[in-house]
Image 1 (spheres, helix red, strand yellow):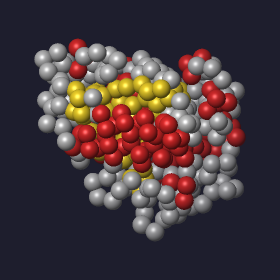
Image 2 (cartoon, one colour):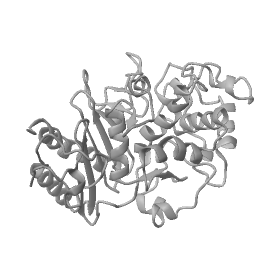
Image 3 (spheres, rainbow, N blue to C red):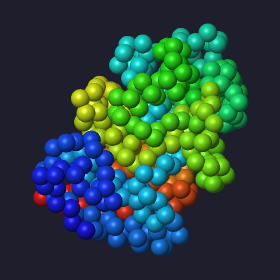
Image 4 (cartoon, rainbow, N blue to C red):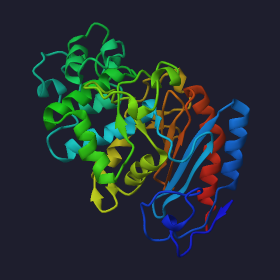
Length: 359
C-alpha cells in the first residue's frame, strides 16, 4: 500500500490507514509501507499473535503511518511494561530543566531518610548503575505509596553493590527516582505526568498504574487498562498504559529537540542526555537483552555508532528511535518479551527501509 501525502495533509486521510493530527502541513515525501504490512502479517501468522498496533513518525513529516492489525484497532489502549521508561525518564528530567533536581547530586541529599546509598544519583538510578537491585515486593504493591516504598528501597543496602560497579536492571531504583521527583516538585507522580507530559503533548490515553509485568499480560490486566484502580504507588519503570497515537507524540518530541508542537517539554540537552551510553566499558549487560550494546535513561542501544535506541517491554512492546535517520516507531503486542524481540527483528528493518526509500 502506497501513501501519497498531498494537499489534504496527514489529518485529512482515511483514519483506517493513517491517524494522528500532530501536523497540519502535508508531509514532504511519499512513503510505501506495503512491505511492512506483509512483514507484520508473516510475523503474526508465524508466532500466533492475535493483534498488533504500529505507528511510525518522521522528524519532518510527523506521523507517517498508524495501523491496527488482527484483533487490535489503531486506538487500542495497552499496558506497555518497561516501554514506560522513556516516558518516565522524560518526566523526571523536566525537573532538571527547571533547576529543582540535579542529575549528579546524591539523592540522599533530597531526602531525610538516612545516609544509605550515599553516591546514588538520578543519573545512576535511571541508567541502572546505582547498585540498587530489584528485590523489594513493595514496588508491586498497589496498597503502598511511592514514598513509603521508596524509603524501604533506600534504607535497605543488604543486597546492593557500590554505585557504578554493576548494571542492575531495577524497578526499585526507578521507584526511588520517582519518589525524589515527588519530593522536589511537591507533586504526586500522577500530577507530574499530567503536567509535564500528558497536557503539553496532548495525550488522551496515557497514565500509570501499579501492575506486575512479571505476570502474563491477561493476569496483570484483569480488564481494560484504565479500569485498573489508580494507586499512590504507580510503577514508574513499567506501569504505563498508552496508545500508539499517544506514544507517537512522545517520539516526535524526542526527534524535535524536546518540543510537542510549539510547547517545550524537554530541553534539547535533556533529550540528548537520555540517549547517552551510560554503562561503562567492561560492565556486562544482562544476557536476556542480548541485542543491546549499551543503555541510556530508558533507551537500550542496539547498535554501535549512530544507534537506533529501543525501549523494550516485558509484554512485547517496543519503541524505536533513530535520531540520525530522523524517524521513530512504536510497536505494541500483548504477549511477552521473547516474542517482542522477534517482532523487532522481523518488522523494524522493513520500517527502516520504507523511511529510507521515501521520495
